[in-house]
Length: 310
Image (cartoon, rainbow, N blue to C red; front, side, top):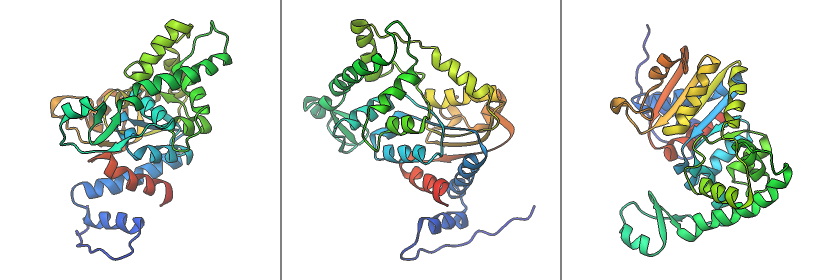
């Protein structure tokens, strides 16, 4: 095997993002090369895969990354989304006027609580802009959505989210982007947040019927008929596992990119590397895969730019 030398790099005024990625390629060491490989794999996923999964946790939707995710969906980079309930909460709240504020990690949380502010890391969310707003908005939207079907017909969560997305005008909304592009959004833990609690109360008061297994039937149809599967899995938990779990029924992912800050030594799925997924058949033995360790808010702007525009 012929090995290339590591090269020193320098910065130049007016460098473009393309120049920065080339810089990382020359730096090579540690996560620099992993970032370059991630961009290469995302480009392959876009070109070759008929099933292109984006799985992510909700925390990043509370940041400006929300707009980038919506943009990547609008531009066709992904065509299946798997996420957590908090994504629905943040996306709906921010689409209807919620003010998410720039805060700090090191604050007096008792003081924030007394001021009526939720803290999500260094994002501050007024309580009035979260649960109460989400409930009010969803009741109004659901009153309109339920007219689409006969009252006795049950809704799958994916089709409900599609209809909700059609009723959002915010151009940075993930649900709106998915609805416009007909990209299905699957939320296996849909009860784990304000969205799920609102569905509970609405169904009790106004008779909305939910079929919790309907989405699983749709996923089975997608993956049993898939020709080639690739995915970007951001963070861990249920969204990462669900994307991998269904990929095994397509013979495993062909290309897989993980972005995480978790480690594998505690046996968690969040920290498990792609090589472990190979033992489950969730990623093919011959697959190309890479893990980029780092904060998604730092990495995604570069990765998505490279995948979309380089």
